[in-house]
Image 1 (cartoon, each protein chain N blue to C red):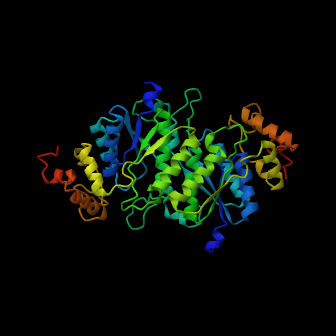
Image 2 (cartoon, each protein chain N blue to C red; image 1 turned 90 degrees about the horizontal axis):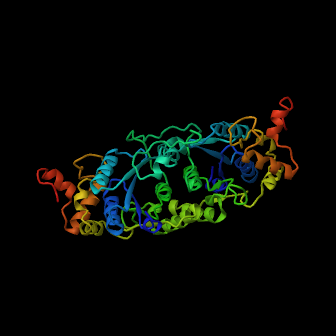
Image 3 (cartoon, chains in turn red, orange; image 1 turned 120 degrees about the horizontal axis):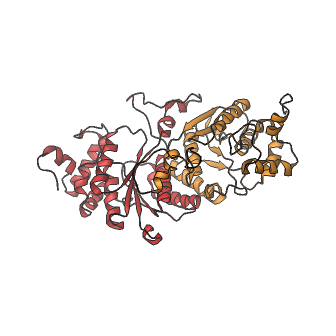
Length: 236
Length: 236
């Protein structure tokens, strides 16, 4: 593989959700199959089912996938840290009894680790499904933060790397339309969105509702719903 | 504690080495005892003795210390990743049989986790002993990268945080002189520098030599050496 070819290789941050799966297909379209790999973070997420989804999606796309562990969030997210005490334990949400792994700037960590892996691979591109139009509202998903991070990574790794955010300004409906154009709809049948971590999805939680709204606005049937309603006739 | 007081609190990244220990005393001087905490990363470093040193230094300074685990570097640093294979194991250096935890941009990760902890504490300041004058030559220790990271963290966490780098342009000799001014010399007796991970330090490895050169240029006796030569008369 020549250096020039490697310039066109991309690493996709693949969570197993709808947006990152669409980005995987965007990258396959843009860089070509065989030029794309995926990285998935095993960070103690609430629903392990996301990891299963990501693995299945990568396998079906024929994309090599690396799973990287991050044990830091479960500790950092712990309520112990909000007090001045020193004893640190893996944090557990008082209500759900599940690890609370949300940490401010978490996405910056994901992308920095992804960039480090890209560096080691000799890849010059990282692709992420972050978006500033939609519900999440996390400041580290916004365009300005991603651009600043890209600059930081270029300086901090002395390496010309580009962070691609194909969904940055897209609505959920536009993302669904993009998935159709890219031939990613069948793969969306394997994605996970539901906050309650169940399959078939609960249909009631905010994440399920937002997903349903996006498909409805796009006038496209959600292959994940279709899969459970008509298991004998898989979406294709 | 009022919001205004918290603006003047600082989190020091404490590795157990000479530079970060000097920075701890710089922070105690600048922000005041009781306004400073330390964070130490347990990331699979070559010499666990560094963690013991950091704990002892923090305790002696009366500084609360949080130890955060990061299991990602040992995997990312693995030689397995240099090939295109997918099987990922904790990397072991072929020569030393020790984990190879060096990853490009590693310092960006440390500082982002430190900033996340500072955020949770309500602290507005992070202090790190990185320097661009000295031997390390890591691009993520340089002024431009740190400034870009500070901007990234401010945008990505929507939080006004400042990264202080009191040693950025100091030579080793200047750092030793600063340690003396700050009353940090006794604490330097507990720091770890030797690449071979032994105590007393080997005196032969590049790290030991560089340290010795700094003390020699400053005309100050290294309290770590003094401690092993005259154990009955501790440095004070």
